Structures are given as C-alpha cells and as structure tokens.
Image (cartoon, rainbow, N blue to C red):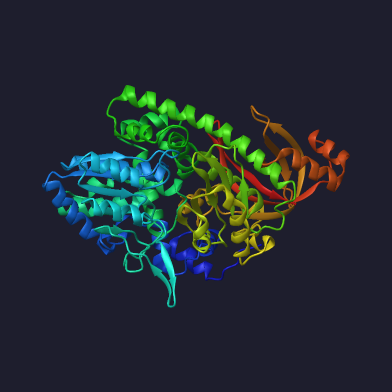
Amino acid sequence: MVTAKRADFKRIGEKFQIDQVTARIIRNRDLTEDEEIRCFLSGTLEDLPDPHLMKDADLLTDILIEKIRQKARIRIIGDYDVDGVMSSYILQHVLTGVGADADVVIPHRIRDGYGLNISLVEDAKKDGIDTILTCDNGIAALDEIAYAVSQGMTVLVTDHHAIPFEETENGHREKKSAASAVVNPHQSACAYPYKELCGAAVAWNVVRILYEKLGYPDEKAQELLEFVAIATVCDVMSLTAANRILVKEGLKRIHHTKNVGMRALIFACGIEPEQIEAYHFGYILGPCVNATGRLDTAKRALRLFMTEDEKEAAEIAFELVSLNDERKEMTRKGVEEARELMQTGVYDQDPVLVIYLPDVHESIAGLIAGRIREMYERPVFVLTKGEEGVKGSGRSTEKYSMYERMCECSELFTKFGGHPMAAGLSLPEENVDRFREKINALCPLTPDEMQSGIRIDVPMPVDYVSVPLVQQFSLLEPFGKDNPKPVFADRNLRIRRMWVIGKNRNVLRLSMLSENGLPVSVIYFGDIPEFRRYIAETFGERELELAEQGKKNAIVLSMVYFPKIDTYGGTESLQFEMKFYR
C-alpha cells in the first residue's frame, strides 16, 4: 500500500531546499505546517516545550530543594530497564552533585518485580529515609505510596506510564496518589504539550528546573542528554517533536562522551563513538544495559555510569556484553518454543496472543513477545512461571491499546502496568486461561484486521535514486517509532546473479537490472531459504539455478527497498536493501 498523503511537494521542496521525494516522506509523517516541517528538519533545544508546564514540576523541585537544605535522606527508586537505569543515573548524578544526601535502589526484577513495593518502602523506613523519589515508576503504586506516607515519609513521583483510572458514570476518572508531587505528562491536568516522553526525559525536565532554581546554567543539564536519548530509543518512544530533538542532541553528545562508563561500553561493543546512530542505542548499547537487569542486577549498569575508575568501567562493560550474549541465546530458544506453539493452530483465531511458556526465564518474556508480534502482527503476551505465580510482558501493535484493555480485566491480575504499546503483569496460574479468554473477548479487532500490511512512502524507480538524494535522507534521521526508515518500491527488476555471503552465510547479494536496463546492487538480510523456495516455486528450479550461476534467466521481481551508500576504496556507490519481494 502506498502512503499517499497530499501536499504541495514542489512548494515544500523549494522552501526547505529538499527533493520532492524527501518532501513526500515528511508529509507521510503527518507533518503539514511549515513550522512543524522546520522543527522536524532543523529543530533545536530552543524548540522544546517549557518544562515548567509540567504539572507539579515546580512543586516537586521546591520540595527537593528544601529536603537538600535540611540534609534529609533521599532515596531514588528506579527500574531495571534502560529507561529506569538512565533515569536513576540522571537523578543520582544531579542530586549528589548539588549536595543532596541521596542514594539509589533499583528493584531486582525477580525478587522485587517492577516498581515500588511494600518491601522497598519498609527498607527505606528502616534505613532512615525521609523522602522517596521515583523515576520511570510510581504512578501505579498507589497503595505502596499511601503506606510510605503513613510511615511518615515524603514521596515524590516522576513517571511516564499510563495513569491508573477507574470507570464511573461520567467515564474514566484518574485515581489520586498520596504522593506530595507527581510529575507525569499523561495527567489530564498537565499542560506540557508533548506527552510521549520516556521516564528519563521526565526526570531530565525536572533536573532542568532544579538546576535553574539553584542558579546553574541550562548547559549543565544538557550534558546529560546522551542518557535521555538512549532511554528514549530503548523505551521505544515516538521519535517525533520533542523526542526527536532530544535524541538528535543526545547523539551529538555521545559522539564525544565524557562519561567513563559510556566510553567503556562503546569500546566493549566495538563501536566508533563518532559512528553511533539511534540504531546502536536500540540494538547494541541498550541491550547490554538491559541484560544486567534481566540476568543479574541493574545496579551493575548503574555503577558503570557512576564510576570514574576506567579499569572498573572496562570490567563492568565487558561483563554487560557477555551477559547480553547469553541473553541473546536464551531469547532465540524462547522464540523457537513460542513459534512451535503457534504452529499447532491453537492460536489461529485469537486476535491477541497469550502464550504461556512456564520454563522460560521471566526476564526475557518481553523480548520474546516483541519477536512474536513482529512475526504474526498481533498483540502478544508471553507469560512465564515465576517464584510467586505467573509473570509476563506484553508487546502491542499500533491498532491495539494494550494497557487500556488490561484495565478492563484488572481483577485477574495481582499487579500490572504499562502503556498502549507495552505492559507487564503478574497473575495467579489458575487465571492464565481466563485471561486469554477475556482479553480476546474484549478485543474489537479480528486477527486479519490487526494486519498492518506493507506500506511504502513512494513508488520510486531505482533509476531515480542518486547518491545526493540518499545523503539528503540523513535529514530524516533519527529513525524509530513513528519515524521509520522510508521505504520505496519498484517493479520489473531482473536478476543477473545471486549469491550468499557473510561469515554465517546469512546475507544474500543480488546483481539486478532495472526495467530500463540500469545495473543495480541489492542486498537482502531476510530468510534466504524462504527466498530461494519462493523463486523456485514461482519460476522453477532451473531458473533459480541459472540465477545462482550468473546466467540469463526469466526471474522478474518487484521489491520494496531502502537505498544506502556503500563506500569502498574511497568510492561511493548505491546499494539497495531489499525489504520485501514479489
């Protein structure tokens, strides 16, 4: 399907000095006003909304300043994922830097579960903590916060997850927290115009106000943007408006990071700092940080960014990389187990997949759910057997608001939380089947309606693509949620030769000819055996053999592609990454 949104592309191209193809891609991202387009192409920190617009942000920072003056003991309670670690680091770094008596506790994924719990509150009371400051959690911990307040503690919440609500005769009503201040842009009374911030970005906005009130320049807060950027990408937040600016600015800073731990992690991953893109956040650096929270304790990752000792940083960084390698193998096995269950046909009619894998490590349930969602284009919950009942994680599709539907069957859970695209939950084992039945009964869409199909930005002949045009596409970066890499399509491409390359023999190269006879270099990272089977079934085994021998054949394909620039020996040439074929 072609995303064909209308606009005066010629005018946009002339005004912003971009190709009309680039103008079409921008329009496909639902940007219509000139100011929106300007901000998308060249927005700066000056274009960010005023952090004072956040409900309770001034109140929370006033309380913090008073607590700092009183030398009151402050405990930051974060989360064990990338966003939680980065949020915790930002608050700990800033508070201790301005003289606060502050420490950090990150819950253990298996022992404590997500977010604030009664045990953590009791530990804080025993340790003489005066104030609990949450980050990337707390909005749903209503009972735990009420208990902490009853024990004489002050509780301050910074979070970005969905606000708990209850149904009344007048519709949704947000549940009230006993915390002294709650900063979360999703609150209905919050005037901050952009709602899609991650937990680290919410904490960073609080920090901006805190620094301002203590007389520090905003540049001091800007030094922390690399941590906000990696959290934004790894929490799969929308890369639009404010988030787009935060990630762009964070990327600039990480290219020359001064953080000892970040430098060590980049080195351990074998990346050149200047080459880091949003992709490296989401698929290389971020997973290493996440791996500690999954298989060990996220305190190790936090320690990595807090240390000033280069030797210690190097040791922790290599531990994180090793843990991530272990996590990858566990995930691969879990995905295979889930796929085997899917192939039984039991789930064919379920628009929402609830897959119970009791023996899978609970820490990788969300990763497996994400992979299965990609394969079957349906919302997925993967449940595992924990120490106390069943735990699970969900990953959703654009058409299905996961957290909202979970609220409608909340009586089945012992604990749950999340947002439209992802969620976590705990429930008794006897409720697993009931949960599957009810969540599917509540789903307004059929499995077929869940399918998003393949959308292309522009049907563009490969002959039109040039090196300068592909270079211009860098203006569209960073790519991610709500700003995917643009994809194009062309038809009647002929295969001259095809061959497999790579250490693991998992990359397919194709030499092709366009409809007009232009030589085209194509690379494919998908399922090669499936591609060969499709070619053999469609054109015959003989034609497949001829193509693999580099001989004349009758194979003609359409392809969905993304163009790239390949640099070899100082020469730049075009390379087309094939995404889909027919």
